[in-house]
Amino acid sequence: MTTAHPAPEAPARTAGIHHVTAIAGDAQRTLDFYAGVLGLRLVKRTVNFDDPTTYHFYFGDAEGTPGSILTFFPWSGAPRGRLGTGQAAVTALAIPPAALGVWLDRLAAHGVAHELPARRFGGETAVAFHDPDGMRLELVTDPAVAAIPGWEGGPVPAEHAIRGVFGVTLWVERGEATARVLVGQLGLREVAREGAREGAVTRYVADGATLGRVVDVREAGGFWRGATGVGTVHHVAFRAADDAAQGALRRQVMQAGHSATPVLDRNYFRSIYFREPGGVLFEIATDPPGFLVDETPDALGRALRLPPQYEPHRAEIEAALPPIALPEPPIAAAAALAGGA
Image (cartoon, rainbow, N blue to C red; front, side):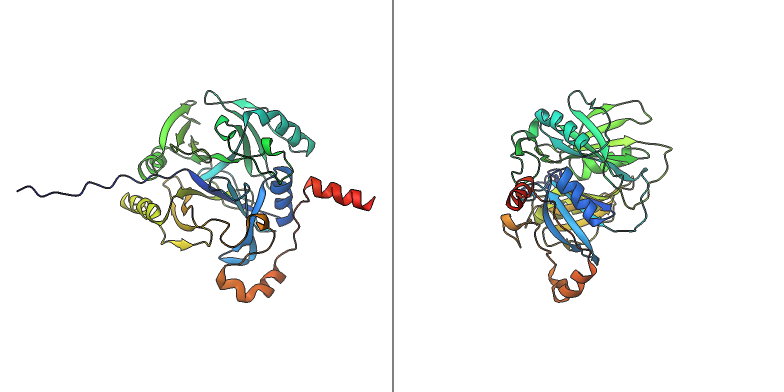
């Protein structure tokens, strides 16, 4: 008599990047640049769960869709970081191809120095620049995001607005071990390679994803090790559709010999963390419950939201945080000027 065995569980796969978290300096300057110059929506203002005297800003699209999110811990006076291996060195933001000229004009109008547009991987055009803290950014033309609506409430016309994260570039000493994590534990697929052995960039994509689908790995052998600080990325978070998917991804990570944290509740998603062999800190974050769990769509980012454990201490937390103001939308600013004329 033959005993039936259950079919093996299919490997779990991430749906791409959920968010990228970086360390900033001055809180107001960070708001002015990302909400004002880049036109992203502040979808949540809260605090660092481990240091409630520090803000945690979340920028994204109209409702904070996974894959559209950049987050920042602004620590005024903290030491600057050093870019090097073991880091997500470049964060790329996706724009429709037709918006490239508008963005070149906008960067120039706001005094943001940038490199000349560069073609790569046979199609996309990338424009490299830095934020006020020296964090390396790119705008990347991506036909796939043209069908995604842009945020209509920002300073950039919706049709030209940044849609979200295109991808990140990891700098590592050698790429083989990092590739095993991206492909074997996270389910990405290698699709292309550019450059010679030293400095070569290998591209991995999350199939089926639009926002946040790209991870480029640059082999920077012999370069110095990066140091975390202002102007550097703290971690890259990958998407899990739900708790079950996150659990499956965590098991794959652990079975491959990597140490992962228990699940941590971040209010807007649940997270686990582990460090890949090249030194980059990875997170796996659930899509739910999302940023509308404690605010309506119209109210996103307008008030300070605190996790339950800090709510009894709201008065002292608010007193310790620096005052901030969102950049005025151009329509509101124009109306105010007209009213005062």
